Length: 520
Figure (spheres, one colour):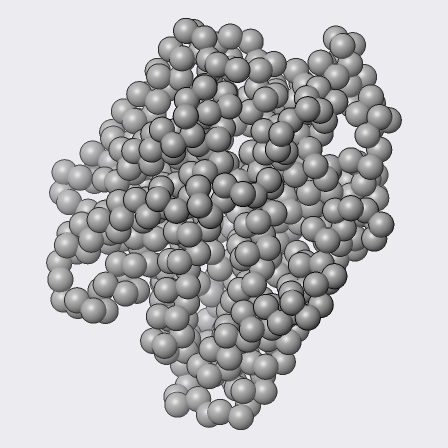
């Protein structure tokens, strides 16, 4: 499939329009020069709608749209648990974790760890996150984005990756988080409406023109195993999504790590005007997460019937875009590319934030604010260059990149969650306890993977979390904290939420209960 002239024209117009918008947003601050708060935290002035839209745009990228649709092709609706469980996770993060971060006025997650523990914990986690963002997240987004461009536009995947990298630099390098967050609003609107339109076309095609409801009925009757939300232990994909564990096990750990302690996600909420605005943005994002499986998973399931001959599952979504009429296909493709670029920009902005504020500024203190912003921009360019080089060698052999990302990060996320949760809510947690949990996470995970290979990775994540939790408690009690730290005090932190947030939370719970009851 290739784009025709009209599609190409629409795509080029969208790209140019987005660049002009981003540069206009950036120019407002550039007149007086940015400081680190302007560049990395959008001057701490983001409204709720920008926070919510940017959270989703940063999250919904190639690994979600392409990768999760591919998992929908291979596994089915069960993969939607990542999205639906994330909705409730977001609300918990907004109520119990975000107030602590905002109270401590932090730029980065490692900065909080330094305030709570010491520089050893901060530096260890900062280096870890930099490695994961560059070698896992950036590479996955570039690789899947390059494959999407090759499938839809017929352009070689390597040129596609280079285009994505250059595009992300062009619109985010000078504007920082503000340029990324405000342009994300346009991209989310197009992604949602373009995605819903593709679902309509896919279901209509499945029913041979009989309509959406008929198409959905055919899918559920012809592919019943693809609509099991909780997989049985005899399912061939049970190792990826082990039954009830998606509701009560390791998926909670994966979600808390991603939505609560992941720099390029939580950075949007840290840039809010105030805590109420941040919580409204998070509630908005939670409802968008409920919608995402319809947009990204259903086309993958429909592709099982419409394109059963695909070489790899990750070709499902790009192949389904052939259903789009001329012009609309170009617009939806532009939104897909822009979402990929938004995630790249978000990740590189967070990489530059962590490198500059947590590592470089400690090595070179006392420099001007503009100097640190300049260093952050250089870090952006270097990280993209590295990711371009290693993307194909690291990911070229995987059929489902989304599952690869989850399993790889699952080695480390249990320890990260233990470090933050114990650091925030247990005053006796020490630096030694935190480091033991971090190291133990990798050691326990590797040991279980080789000694108990039949254990599903999500169950392994939950078990390793419990082991790390116990290890942190034992080591913390055995070691003595050098001094009490005010960052652990919750006396001045209010966990009260307003009526609208509480109603939004109740709504998410009711919707999730209905969804799982219907597709159990």
